[in-house]
Length: 463
Image (cartoon, rainbow, N blue to C red; front, top):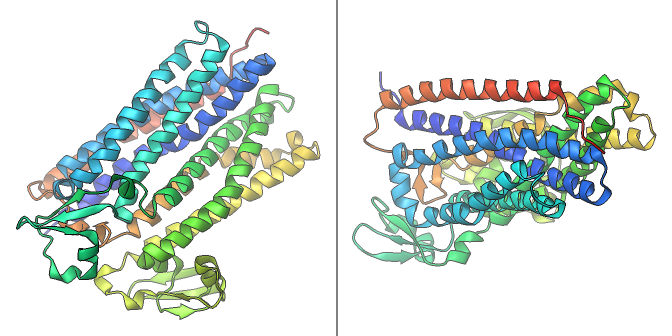
């Protein structure tokens, strides 16, 4: 039986990236909440803020360490399983990854050590500055990673070096793609700023960062709600929940509008087949409906039992209820992304986004009415919602990456042409099993460490 090496390589990459993505999703948002806690403690001198900083700083350290370890493994795969991809994009892909290491990761790591071990050794102001630099470094790091990934989605600022030695511009290629053979070609950087700020970089960056802020808020809020449920007058838990509500509600609302809205409009203009797949638009149509619910099928492409609102998608995508949204029927079927996966992952992400606004708005209302701390149902909902933003981020990533298929680099390099030709299916299977076992151990150890820390609770701090 023939084994699909491309599918195995994609499965291995998905597994390693998905596991790694859990940790920076939490740490970026948590870092900015630690900035808020430490700044408030510096200004007010209240011991409870130091408790919050010490406790969540410890959890931050655990999470950051595993994120670093899994991130390194993820990068190594470009040279093992995806050598053809690395050859094609190496001149461009290397620049943002190098910038991430030099300008962000080293800064983040250095100041994290100062923050975790310098509390009693440096001034309060310097200590606050150290966690601010950690948060800034994490956010800058995310920018350069998003730059690299966004270039795959909407490549810009490049030329193509063909196997025969010719260099052709992006405009020349796009004017007549069939005239050029890209076998053994490679992309070369000709405009750094155009490559960095390609059409999808900023919409995707803000969408990702705000997803991380929401994850950090629910991480803090869920743990705080756990302590309040145990003791409704617990000052530590109450303050954690208050900060999480404000932080999370603002981020959740902005994530929907304008950030999510702008990202959707960018996708409709620059990646119409992905937009059509995630929205369930199979025939081009004006006054295109937004699909609230449906069951998509690939063959034939149709939506079963759809629930739709006419005209809304045209208005959201182009600001005109009568605008035409391109359907998949106008695109060769070999260029279609998997319809079920993209549609379902995107719509479930949206459902979770609506839940975040709802539960945080409910908690804010009860807080205003001074009844939150005794409302065990809402507190329990906050606890159980703790992992949901991470799941929503995973679903968004699946929609973005699967929706780009069959392209590794959009309309330039197919995923099937990107794998390493010398790596056998047996080796990839062995690596998948090995990574699964290692990551299972790491994941279980991380969860147990967090649970044990939470059960132990924050240490008392002298006034």
